[in-house]
Length: 428
Image (tube, rainbow, N blue to C red):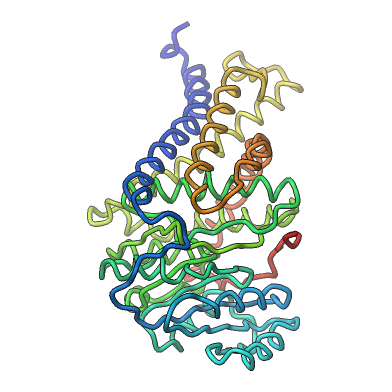
């Protein structure tokens, strides 16, 4: 029977085709986009993060570090921040109502480093409020924001400023987060993920003209741009995604600077990874829901590829869930032939996706080798990425999107406060 004579058969074929061709198409788009970006905007530049471009002017900068229960990590972060190779800067650390010894550590370090200012909030107000307070206290036009576990490369501020000073319409710049802890399987896989997924995606999106998000772990902002859009929203789960959309919908340019390195601690337990990815999924969905009304206008057309790509990824997660559900159901009930799923793994589809995934990792690690040596030794561990991370990402999408929908139905949303994240095992 031809597919157009059987709607059920047609729907099943379309569903299977989408499940296979969407990740295949996106992998090739990311590889081609990242390669174009590399040869257009990276290849000709001085090799490596240790050779920043000379700046005609070097205006003062405030480096902002929001902290919540980070007594074990904030010391390293501040010590790296105060050693920036930049002539005029201050560091503002915000203790956002921490219940551990974070406040005491920050006060001790303020006595050692005159350029460090410490702000104590009596109660936990959330990362967005901590960033807002520090930005308003800063007397400077340019802000560099990092997480309290981030170890900023000494030239990162110069690289970020080179982008902000290049054009007056640049409102924000995303740095290049790198993984510090690599002693477990989850940590080693994320080394490749930060290159092949996050780094590649940002490069490709810059070719499209817009970024889905700056990196909340390391980014720089023009304060006047933040003032125009009302700073970071206090009720959004992911403040970095939200501020990126607010700036770009206000016609500010948001860029990616791969030479601005910041070394991070990432979750190395399934529980910690689940919490992180669920927050990312929910936060992305919240931004799409909130800004849908603005993104549909012609003046926001450069955001359309970003919006459609994210919506397609959400749809793919639900399609995979349906296929998995059908595969489970066929073990217990008799399924119609069009809905019978024989296997989830052993087919030429899975083989093609696996080969493409490994090729994508190879291209990304080759590009990122100019920023970090020895990445090739992690290539073997990346064969586990589709099994571990695609599974987690599918389930976080399934849970995160409904959470975002019901949360955003509350007018204005409730205040987004953070919890102590899983920083994994310390680097060895």
